[in-house]
Image (cartoon, rainbow, N blue to C red; front, side, top):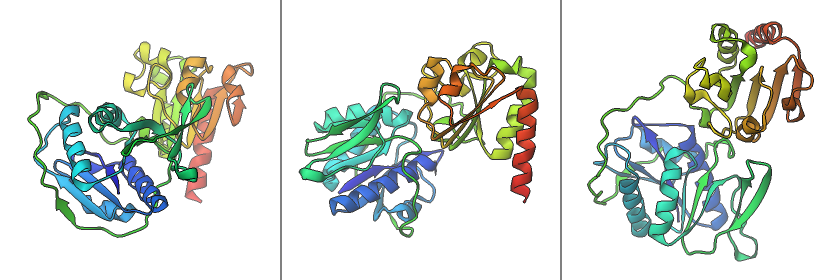
Length: 317
Protein backbone atom coordinates (compact mmCIF):
# COMPACT_ATOMS: atom_id res chain seq x y z
CA UNK A 1 0.00 0.00 0.00
CA UNK A 2 1.10 3.56 -0.74
CA UNK A 3 0.12 6.04 1.98
CA UNK A 4 0.08 9.75 1.12
CA UNK A 5 0.09 12.42 3.81
CA UNK A 6 -2.01 15.24 2.35
CA UNK A 7 -1.40 18.44 4.28
CA UNK A 8 -4.19 20.97 4.69
CA UNK A 9 -3.70 24.62 5.69
CA UNK A 10 -6.60 26.22 7.56
CA UNK A 11 -8.63 23.14 6.64
CA UNK A 12 -8.04 23.45 2.90
CA UNK A 13 -5.69 21.67 0.50
CA UNK A 14 -3.17 23.38 -1.73
CA UNK A 15 -1.78 22.15 -5.02
CA UNK A 16 1.10 20.34 -3.31
CA UNK A 17 -1.35 17.93 -1.66
CA UNK A 18 -2.94 17.06 -5.01
CA UNK A 19 0.51 16.56 -6.55
CA UNK A 20 1.46 14.17 -3.74
CA UNK A 21 -1.73 12.14 -4.18
CA UNK A 22 -1.26 12.03 -7.96
CA UNK A 23 2.30 10.80 -7.42
CA UNK A 24 1.16 8.23 -4.86
CA UNK A 25 -1.56 6.96 -7.21
CA UNK A 26 0.87 6.54 -10.10
CA UNK A 27 3.47 4.87 -7.86
CA UNK A 28 0.80 2.48 -6.53
CA UNK A 29 -0.14 1.55 -10.08
CA UNK A 30 3.49 0.70 -10.85
CA UNK A 31 3.72 -1.36 -7.66
CA UNK A 32 0.43 -3.15 -8.30
CA UNK A 33 -1.13 -1.91 -5.08
CA UNK A 34 -3.53 0.77 -3.83
CA UNK A 35 -3.06 4.40 -2.84
CA UNK A 36 -4.71 5.80 0.27
CA UNK A 37 -4.44 9.26 1.79
CA UNK A 38 -4.35 10.46 5.38
CA UNK A 39 -5.31 13.92 6.66
CA UNK A 40 -4.85 15.33 10.15
CA UNK A 41 -7.11 17.67 12.07
CA UNK A 42 -10.16 19.43 10.68
CA UNK A 43 -10.15 19.29 6.87
CA UNK A 44 -12.80 20.55 4.47
CA UNK A 45 -13.77 18.28 1.56
CA UNK A 46 -11.09 15.67 2.29
CA UNK A 47 -12.96 13.24 0.04
CA UNK A 48 -11.84 15.23 -3.02
CA UNK A 49 -8.46 13.49 -2.76
CA UNK A 50 -10.20 10.54 -4.40
CA UNK A 51 -10.43 12.64 -7.56
CA UNK A 52 -6.63 12.52 -7.80
CA UNK A 53 -6.31 8.79 -7.29
CA UNK A 54 -6.74 7.96 -3.59
CA UNK A 55 -8.90 4.87 -3.20
CA UNK A 56 -9.57 5.73 0.44
CA UNK A 57 -9.13 8.83 2.60
CA UNK A 58 -8.55 8.57 6.33
CA UNK A 59 -8.70 11.35 8.88
CA UNK A 60 -7.28 11.59 12.37
CA UNK A 61 -9.04 14.33 14.31
CA UNK A 62 -8.29 16.15 17.52
CA UNK A 63 -5.12 17.79 16.21
CA UNK A 64 -4.98 21.57 16.28
CA UNK A 65 -1.63 23.13 15.42
CA UNK A 66 1.39 21.64 13.67
CA UNK A 67 3.82 19.82 15.94
CA UNK A 68 6.34 17.63 14.12
CA UNK A 69 6.53 15.14 17.01
CA UNK A 70 2.75 14.72 17.12
CA UNK A 71 2.43 14.43 13.35
CA UNK A 72 5.29 11.91 13.25
CA UNK A 73 3.66 9.74 15.91
CA UNK A 74 0.26 9.76 14.21
CA UNK A 75 1.56 9.08 10.69
CA UNK A 76 3.87 6.32 11.95
CA UNK A 77 0.96 4.67 13.75
CA UNK A 78 -1.09 4.92 10.54
CA UNK A 79 1.70 3.29 8.51
CA UNK A 80 1.85 0.38 10.95
CA UNK A 81 -1.93 0.07 11.30
CA UNK A 82 -2.60 0.11 7.54
CA UNK A 83 0.47 -1.89 6.54
CA UNK A 84 1.81 0.77 4.16
CA UNK A 85 5.14 0.06 2.49
CA UNK A 86 5.58 3.42 0.71
CA UNK A 87 4.87 6.82 2.29
CA UNK A 88 4.64 10.00 0.20
CA UNK A 89 4.50 13.61 1.37
CA UNK A 90 5.22 17.06 -0.04
CA UNK A 91 8.75 18.47 0.05
CA UNK A 92 7.72 21.66 1.84
CA UNK A 93 8.49 22.99 5.30
CA UNK A 94 6.18 20.40 6.90
CA UNK A 95 7.59 17.53 4.87
CA UNK A 96 11.14 18.55 5.71
CA UNK A 97 10.24 18.49 9.41
CA UNK A 98 8.64 15.05 9.19
CA UNK A 99 10.71 12.97 6.78
CA UNK A 100 13.76 12.39 8.99
CA UNK A 101 11.69 11.80 12.12
CA UNK A 102 9.50 9.25 10.33
CA UNK A 103 12.53 7.50 8.86
CA UNK A 104 14.02 7.08 12.33
CA UNK A 105 10.69 6.03 13.86
CA UNK A 106 9.94 3.44 11.14
CA UNK A 107 13.56 2.36 10.53
CA UNK A 108 12.97 3.28 6.91
CA UNK A 109 15.06 4.62 4.06
CA UNK A 110 14.07 8.06 2.79
CA UNK A 111 14.77 10.43 -0.09
CA UNK A 112 13.82 14.10 0.09
CA UNK A 113 12.75 16.20 -2.89
CA UNK A 114 12.28 13.43 -5.47
CA UNK A 115 11.67 14.38 -9.09
CA UNK A 116 10.59 11.05 -10.58
CA UNK A 117 8.31 8.08 -10.14
CA UNK A 118 10.09 5.01 -8.78
CA UNK A 119 12.06 2.85 -11.19
CA UNK A 120 11.27 -0.76 -10.26
CA UNK A 121 13.57 -2.43 -12.76
CA UNK A 122 15.55 -5.33 -11.34
CA UNK A 123 13.27 -5.51 -8.34
CA UNK A 124 14.62 -2.27 -6.88
CA UNK A 125 13.02 1.03 -5.91
CA UNK A 126 15.00 3.89 -7.42
CA UNK A 127 14.11 7.59 -7.52
CA UNK A 128 15.84 10.70 -8.85
CA UNK A 129 16.45 14.02 -7.11
CA UNK A 130 18.37 17.18 -7.83
CA UNK A 131 21.78 17.62 -6.18
CA UNK A 132 24.42 20.38 -6.10
CA UNK A 133 21.71 23.07 -6.15
CA UNK A 134 20.01 21.40 -9.08
CA UNK A 135 23.11 21.22 -11.27
CA UNK A 136 22.96 17.40 -11.42
CA UNK A 137 20.49 14.57 -10.97
CA UNK A 138 21.29 11.69 -8.61
CA UNK A 139 19.60 8.30 -8.45
CA UNK A 140 18.91 6.79 -5.04
CA UNK A 141 17.78 3.24 -4.30
CA UNK A 142 15.75 2.53 -1.17
CA UNK A 143 16.08 -1.05 0.01
CA UNK A 144 14.30 -0.93 3.37
CA UNK A 145 10.88 -2.64 3.78
CA UNK A 146 9.22 0.76 4.29
CA UNK A 147 10.18 3.53 1.90
CA UNK A 148 9.68 7.27 2.46
CA UNK A 149 9.81 10.01 -0.18
CA UNK A 150 8.95 13.68 -0.28
CA UNK A 151 7.91 15.08 -3.65
CA UNK A 152 9.48 18.27 -5.01
CA UNK A 153 6.92 20.87 -6.06
CA UNK A 154 5.84 21.30 -9.71
CA UNK A 155 7.48 18.01 -10.74
CA UNK A 156 4.39 15.82 -11.21
CA UNK A 157 1.40 17.30 -13.09
CA UNK A 158 -1.85 16.98 -11.16
CA UNK A 159 -4.16 14.45 -12.84
CA UNK A 160 -7.85 13.75 -12.32
CA UNK A 161 -8.24 9.97 -12.33
CA UNK A 162 -11.15 9.14 -10.02
CA UNK A 163 -14.07 10.44 -8.01
CA UNK A 164 -14.63 11.76 -4.53
CA UNK A 165 -14.58 9.10 -1.84
CA UNK A 166 -16.00 8.84 1.66
CA UNK A 167 -13.71 9.90 4.51
CA UNK A 168 -13.13 7.31 7.21
CA UNK A 169 -11.97 8.09 10.73
CA UNK A 170 -8.78 6.29 11.66
CA UNK A 171 -8.73 5.21 15.30
CA UNK A 172 -5.38 6.58 16.41
CA UNK A 173 -4.64 8.44 19.61
CA UNK A 174 -2.48 11.51 19.08
CA UNK A 175 0.02 12.25 21.87
CA UNK A 176 -0.24 15.52 23.75
CA UNK A 177 1.66 18.34 22.12
CA UNK A 178 4.49 20.01 24.00
CA UNK A 179 4.32 22.99 21.64
CA UNK A 180 2.06 25.92 22.41
CA UNK A 181 1.24 28.08 19.37
CA UNK A 182 0.50 31.62 20.50
CA UNK A 183 0.02 33.27 17.12
CA UNK A 184 0.14 32.42 13.42
CA UNK A 185 0.82 35.04 10.75
CA UNK A 186 0.27 33.80 7.24
CA UNK A 187 0.19 35.56 3.89
CA UNK A 188 -3.27 35.06 2.42
CA UNK A 189 -4.61 35.41 -1.10
CA UNK A 190 -1.41 34.45 -2.93
CA UNK A 191 0.10 31.19 -4.11
CA UNK A 192 3.14 30.50 -1.88
CA UNK A 193 6.44 30.68 -3.75
CA UNK A 194 7.34 26.97 -3.29
CA UNK A 195 4.02 26.02 -4.94
CA UNK A 196 3.84 28.75 -7.60
CA UNK A 197 3.83 27.72 -11.27
CA UNK A 198 4.50 31.28 -12.46
CA UNK A 199 6.89 33.68 -10.71
CA UNK A 200 7.84 37.26 -11.57
CA UNK A 201 10.95 38.39 -9.71
CA UNK A 202 12.94 41.62 -9.65
CA UNK A 203 16.20 42.97 -8.27
CA UNK A 204 18.15 46.14 -7.67
CA UNK A 205 17.58 47.20 -11.27
CA UNK A 206 14.19 48.45 -10.08
CA UNK A 207 16.09 51.34 -8.41
CA UNK A 208 13.64 51.57 -5.51
CA UNK A 209 10.44 50.16 -3.95
CA UNK A 210 8.40 52.98 -5.45
CA UNK A 211 8.83 51.41 -8.91
CA UNK A 212 7.56 47.95 -7.94
CA UNK A 213 4.13 48.63 -9.43
CA UNK A 214 5.23 47.54 -12.90
CA UNK A 215 6.38 44.18 -11.49
CA UNK A 216 3.08 43.66 -9.69
CA UNK A 217 1.13 44.63 -12.83
CA UNK A 218 2.97 41.99 -14.88
CA UNK A 219 2.48 39.38 -12.16
CA UNK A 220 -1.23 40.18 -11.93
CA UNK A 221 -1.69 39.93 -15.69
CA UNK A 222 -0.02 36.49 -15.67
CA UNK A 223 -1.59 35.25 -12.44
CA UNK A 224 1.94 34.89 -11.03
CA UNK A 225 3.51 35.20 -7.58
CA UNK A 226 6.04 37.97 -7.01
CA UNK A 227 9.57 37.40 -5.72
CA UNK A 228 12.81 39.32 -5.32
CA UNK A 229 16.58 38.97 -4.97
CA UNK A 230 18.34 39.06 -1.61
CA UNK A 231 19.66 42.67 -1.85
CA UNK A 232 16.10 43.85 -2.41
CA UNK A 233 14.84 42.03 0.69
CA UNK A 234 17.83 43.18 2.75
CA UNK A 235 17.08 46.79 1.78
CA UNK A 236 13.47 46.30 2.92
CA UNK A 237 12.10 47.10 -0.53
CA UNK A 238 10.16 43.84 -0.37
CA UNK A 239 9.24 41.43 2.47
CA UNK A 240 11.76 38.68 3.23
CA UNK A 241 9.32 35.86 2.43
CA UNK A 242 9.65 36.92 -1.25
CA UNK A 243 13.43 36.42 -1.28
CA UNK A 244 14.39 33.56 -3.62
CA UNK A 245 17.85 32.08 -3.94
CA UNK A 246 20.31 29.87 -2.10
CA UNK A 247 19.77 31.75 1.17
CA UNK A 248 16.06 32.31 0.57
CA UNK A 249 13.29 30.19 -0.89
CA UNK A 250 14.30 27.59 -3.47
CA UNK A 251 11.66 27.40 -6.21
CA UNK A 252 11.01 25.36 -9.36
CA UNK A 253 8.14 27.08 -11.23
CA UNK A 254 7.15 26.40 -14.81
CA UNK A 255 8.04 30.02 -15.68
CA UNK A 256 10.46 32.35 -13.89
CA UNK A 257 10.79 35.93 -15.13
CA UNK A 258 13.83 37.75 -13.71
CA UNK A 259 13.72 41.54 -14.05
CA UNK A 260 16.78 43.65 -13.29
CA UNK A 261 18.62 40.77 -11.59
CA UNK A 262 22.26 40.22 -12.54
CA UNK A 263 22.20 36.51 -11.76
CA UNK A 264 24.76 35.91 -9.04
CA UNK A 265 25.49 32.24 -8.34
CA UNK A 266 23.67 32.41 -4.99
CA UNK A 267 20.49 33.55 -6.72
CA UNK A 268 20.78 31.03 -9.54
CA UNK A 269 21.13 28.18 -7.04
CA UNK A 270 17.60 28.81 -5.82
CA UNK A 271 15.87 29.21 -9.20
CA UNK A 272 17.81 27.15 -11.74
CA UNK A 273 15.34 24.27 -11.54
CA UNK A 274 12.67 26.46 -13.15
CA UNK A 275 11.29 24.92 -16.34
CA UNK A 276 11.64 28.17 -18.36
CA UNK A 277 13.69 31.23 -17.35
CA UNK A 278 13.16 34.63 -18.97
CA UNK A 279 15.67 37.39 -18.18
CA UNK A 280 15.12 41.12 -18.73
CA UNK A 281 18.25 43.23 -18.19
CA UNK A 282 19.88 46.20 -19.89
CA UNK A 283 23.36 44.73 -19.38
CA UNK A 284 24.09 42.21 -22.18
CA UNK A 285 26.94 40.80 -20.07
CA UNK A 286 24.71 39.96 -17.09
CA UNK A 287 25.53 36.39 -15.92
CA UNK A 288 21.82 35.50 -15.81
CA UNK A 289 21.65 35.41 -19.61
CA UNK A 290 23.84 32.27 -19.60
CA UNK A 291 21.14 30.43 -17.65
CA UNK A 292 18.18 31.94 -19.49
CA UNK A 293 15.96 30.18 -22.02
CA UNK A 294 14.90 33.59 -23.32
CA UNK A 295 16.54 36.95 -22.80
CA UNK A 296 15.59 40.56 -23.48
CA UNK A 297 18.35 43.16 -23.48
CA UNK A 298 16.71 46.48 -22.75
CA UNK A 299 15.58 49.00 -20.16
CA UNK A 300 13.16 47.19 -17.88
CA UNK A 301 11.10 50.37 -17.48
CA UNK A 302 10.35 50.20 -21.20
CA UNK A 303 10.21 46.42 -21.65
CA UNK A 304 8.09 45.32 -18.67
CA UNK A 305 5.07 47.63 -19.29
CA UNK A 306 5.06 46.58 -22.96
CA UNK A 307 5.19 42.92 -21.95
CA UNK A 308 2.30 43.45 -19.53
CA UNK A 309 0.19 45.06 -22.26
CA UNK A 310 1.03 42.21 -24.64
CA UNK A 311 -0.07 39.64 -22.05
CA UNK A 312 -3.33 41.51 -21.46
CA UNK A 313 -4.07 41.70 -25.18
CA UNK A 314 -3.27 38.02 -25.64
CA UNK A 315 -5.59 37.00 -22.81
CA UNK A 316 -8.35 39.31 -24.04
CA UNK A 317 -8.17 37.68 -27.48
